Image (tube, rainbow, N blue to C red; front, side, top):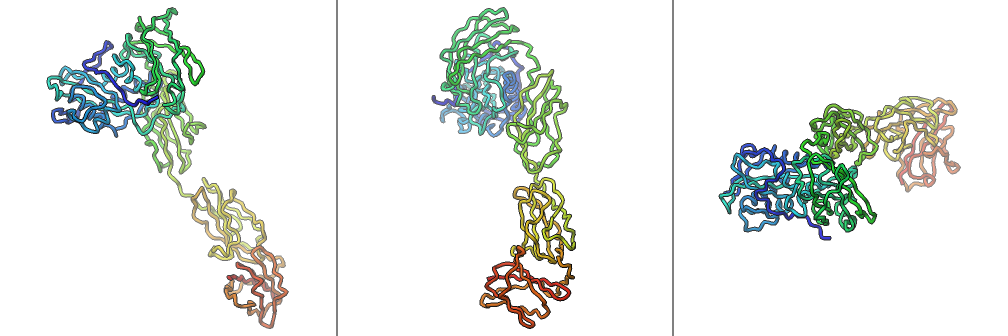
Length: 597
C-alpha cells in the first residue's frame, strides 16, 4: 500500500456548520502585528492564539482518551506562510504552485503537511474564531475520506504548530478571507503508545460535545492494532472486508446505516471504516457494535456507546502538561521539584516516577496530590529518571501526560576514612586485614599497599580495584618487621574519589627481636646486568635471608659471604622487589633490592 502523507481536502469556502457557532474575533485580539496580504506579509499571530489552537485540539482528543499534543514552534513559519498563500490566492491547495501569489518554500512545506481551512469573513472585527477551524476539521463535512478528522485523532501525533492569516485576497480583493493551517505530519518523533490501553478510536465516543458533531455526516472507527509502528495498522493487519456495523438506541431499535465505506489511506492511522446513521438525536445514548473485523487474522467484535450532548461532563479531564524540569534536562540538582500545569476541575493529581522509560517499578506512585508540584529528595546522582502525571476528579483519572525525563547532577564521591591498621600501628599480622568507612553511592573500592610512599607500580604489594566490601584481608603473607604504606579510594562506574590519607604500619616480628630502622636509604637499586654478583658491604651480619614479594625465601647456597662483604648471584634474581633481612646479635635490619634487568 502506498503511504499517503498528505491531506487532499475540499474547499471550505464559507462553511458555517449547523453545530453551534463560536465567538467571533477581531484583528487586535488575534495579532501582535496585523497581516498585510497585499505585500505578502503574514503578520505576527499572538502566542496565546497558537496555544488556544493546541488547547482546542487537546480538548477534542481528550474525549477519545488520546494523549495530548505539545506545541512545536519550529514550524510556525511554515504554517503561517501556508495560510498566507491560501488567502492571497483565495483557494486551498496542499501543493501550491510556484507561480501562486505570495508563494514561498516555507508555505509549500506547511501546505503539504497540514490541515487547511479557508472561510469568508464578515469584517475585520467579525472574524471566525480559531475554534471554528477545529470544528470544521473534526466534523470534516463534505470530505468523503475524513482526512482532517483522522489526522487530528491520530494517537501517535505528539506535536502541532498553528498559523492563520486574515485579509483580502490578492486575486479577488473584494473577499475578506480567513485561512488556518495546523501541522499534523512530518515531525521528528511521535507518541510512545506502550502505556496507552485503548484498542480503537471511535467518533463520536461516549458523551460527546454537540458542537463537534454533524449527525447527518459520517461516523468513523479506527483500529489501533500495533502501538509501536503506525504503518503496521494497514490492510495487512486490519481487514474490514467482512465487517458489519450496527447502531441501536436505548430501546434496542436498530438505526438505519448507509454509505458504509472503509479505506487504508495514510491519514493518521492507515485504516478507517465510516458510515452514515439516520435519525440521530441529541441526549440519546446509542450503542455501536462493529463485527467481523479481522485483526492480525483473527475476527473481532468491538462495542462502544456515544451520546451527542450539549452538556459534556467535565469528568473528561485533560491530562496535565509537565513543565519542570524540561524534558531531557541534565545536571539537575537534588532535590528536584517536579511541576505541571493545573487542570480545571481536577481534585487530585497522580504522579509516577521511575528509572525505566515505560514507568515500570516506579519509585514514586501517588494519586492524592492536591498541588501541581512535588519535590523528590531521595534520588541518586547521575541517574536518568522518567515521570508523568494525570488529573483526577470524582475518582476518574485522565490519561497520563507525556512522559518527561531528567538526569540528576553527578555528585563527586568522597574518600573513605581508613580505620585499621591504625597509622603507625606495630605488630600487625602478616596477613593484615584492612578496614575503612563506607562511602554512599560507591559500588566498589580501590586498595593499595606499598613498600614506600610513592605507590609506584613496582613497589605495590596490593593493588585491588574491585573490592565490593569495606573490609579486605590479604591472601598472602607480608614480610615480617617491615613498614608498609596503605591508602584506599571509592569508585562508581568510571569515577573515583580522591585517595584517603596515607597510613603506615609495621608487621610483627615472629622472633620478637628488636627492630631498628637504618638511617640509610631503605632500598638499593640494582641495574647492572653485566655483573655476576651483587656485592653489598654488610660487615655486621650474623645471618641473612632474601625474600621475594610473596614472602618466599630464596635459596642462598650460592651466596658468598666474606669479611665485611656479601655477594648474591645476579642471575638468581628476577625483575622487581626483593627483601633482604639482615640479622645481627640484637636486631634485624631490612633492606629492599629493586632489580631492573
